[in-house]
Length: 395
Image (cartoon, rainbow, N blue to C red; front, side):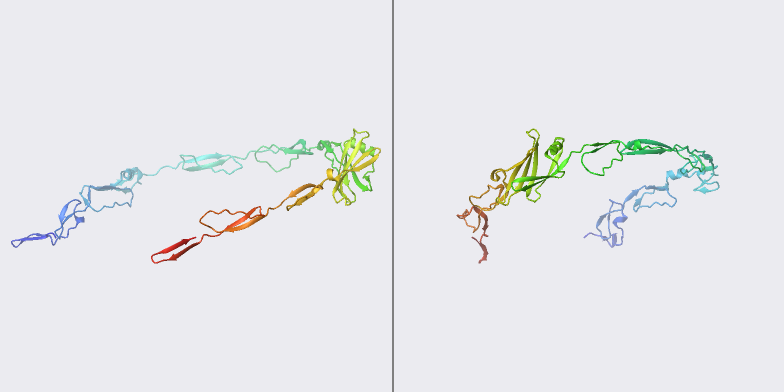
């Protein structure tokens, strides 16, 4: 503990007990002793000479706490001082000791002219003027309305385009009616091109065409029936062989409708004009219920001398349908079928196994092709408490 009072010969040489000085009362860095006798260092900031400015009418300058040496000052900023001159102050008014001399200036107004327009206009004074003294709006110019003119276009897709147009002069016009010139369109101008007709029918619209090109190939409907061993050929138009041959020679065709009794699978034909005599070969596929229910092919040669037919070998030339094979076996008869679909599932075995310390190989038993699945049991695992801990048993 420090000494804060010294009395010598009844005299008090040092007595700090009544001091109330603190560190904030002493300049920063200056050493002193407090009332307790302990040495301390001052903390008062030394501001020195502080200067400041005020730039607004109500502006203030805040003096910071600390030591000031008396050389500081606060004044109006130089920018604001430059504004406080007689020319900027009204005559007869004194501001901060400056007597004003400004008595006002003349107002400069401008006179302008504008032309009418179809859009709104805003007339303002040019730069350097305080406003407008007057604005003169010129009279509207006179305009004209001419007669409409129609232009006839070219034919497109059996139609013609008429384009009206008119050229007017901008300006004020009085009410009135202007009639355009008539446009005449003839019937020949609205028809063009050629309509091609390649098949029989009624109600073909040829109104907008200049010409019609008809090129229709004759198609005859032919019904083939079988009565006994000879076929019966029925033509829609009841044509003879010579007439049918002429149609085929001209690019026509036959439409084979098949068996009128519903027994036919399909009918086709081939025409051989180079044969002697010329021959139409009719091919007729049908199911004969009297011959095992399989499909057979009948060929008929139609010539000017008549119709001759024969049946092909059904087991060689006319296999039909598809046989489904889903199980193993031997000597499956597929002679009468055109296709065979085989979908035989192998015999598989499901087995189980228990984990062991050595490797195991699991295979299917005799009589199986393989395994469908193997179920492997969980590894045996137990935990038991002993005197000092836990015993783990695996297997």
